[in-house]
Amino acid sequence: MSDERLILSSATPGEHRIDDIAVVNVDGAPLVVCTGFPTLWSWAPMQDEWQERPLAYAFAEDPLAAEYPDAENGIDSVAVAVSDGRVVVAAGGDEQGAAIWDLNSGELLRGTTYDEPYVSSIATVAGEGPPLFVASSGVHWDGARVRGLSREESPVELDAGSIWGLATVSIDGRALIVGGGEEGVEVWDATNGEQVASFHVDEETAYAVALSQLDGRPVVVAGTASGKVYVFDLTGDDADEPIREPSTGHEGCVNALDVAVVGDRPVAVTGGEDGTVRIWDLASGRQIGPPLTGHNWSVEAVVVTTMHDRAVAVTAGRDGVVRVWDLTL
Image (cartoon, rainbow, N blue to C red):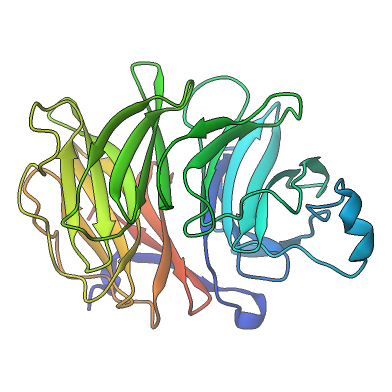
């Protein structure tokens, strides 16, 4: 067991499963936003306080909405950002397109329509300026779309196959998006949708992805359906090959991952179908310590953030529990 790393643990009200989480810093403290409920909920870990977050119906602006007066949101993917002092949340699901709300008031800022692509993954685009979000649709639609708060601006289309996992990073002022799917891993420029790179993962589906840096160069990290963790050099000449053999340890799919630099060591944190959370040294590919085994069902979400100036991993999944792990031990 590795519970010495466990800082906090809190079950959702009603013990609902959690399909996704996003973390945003509000007044110097992390706020965790959770999906998997009939409505959205947030958890303030510093106070261990849960709050229900009702949201206006995402299809309210579609004329067809009048035909479904009792319909409710069905969201299981979420991203958050801070804009002009307020927290905005973008979310969707496997039967609902991406929409954007004010988290505190529940006001719909940018709705969706019944013919919009459904959502398998959504992420906040890294960078300065007004918030942007990127959403993909898995098997429902190919590619991904970048959109902001303004209804007047058309989405930026990212040309790709089925994308299941998304992540973003800003490198030298350039916002990059990485997507993992059935055809491997692809990287785009968020501004114009131009493809920057693509990688194969031995004909596996990549369900979880992230962007990090290793020895001063950008790298792409991908977790696959068979439990492998790949690392690719984004600027290398032999870009289609991983920098080493993939790391193994999970039994079953890697559902989620995030990256961090702990001290001066780049690491990846993965959550798996086997219910474990694992920490990996990106330089060597080796697992750091034993697996973190607090969850008793599949881990669906992993987000790295800071608490009390310490790097922590926030994890959640089908057991309906959010756990916070110390990454500095």
